[in-house]
Image (tube, rainbow, N blue to C red):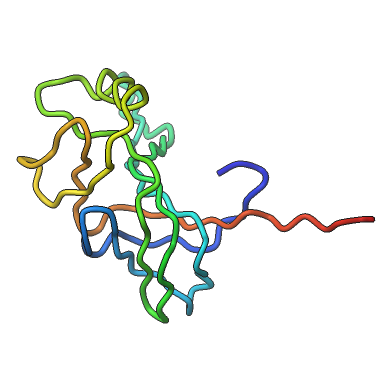
Length: 139
């Protein structure tokens, strides 16, 4: 999240609605509005290898969405960007390749369908919804 946006809600991925749309379990009742941004995140726990002490977490964005439907108890977001799920190819290489060739970005519900132009999303993955801060015009 950058300083020009505010966190609206935190939820989880619910259902792949279509290859380019994902439903999440937070909606208008949680403050979500059409046009908000959402990110499906992978949370990686960082642990000290010597002591086993948990040092913190790293939040990696897997899928970026723009909310297109904000029902009372859920929302649907349309994919705007993602880091591809790559089978047999390094994720970094696939991400770099995806920036060169703009193909349709798709969501898949099976890791066997994942490719360099798709991302595998499962129910229950962490999602954060944000909104751009409105800037007042002082003129």
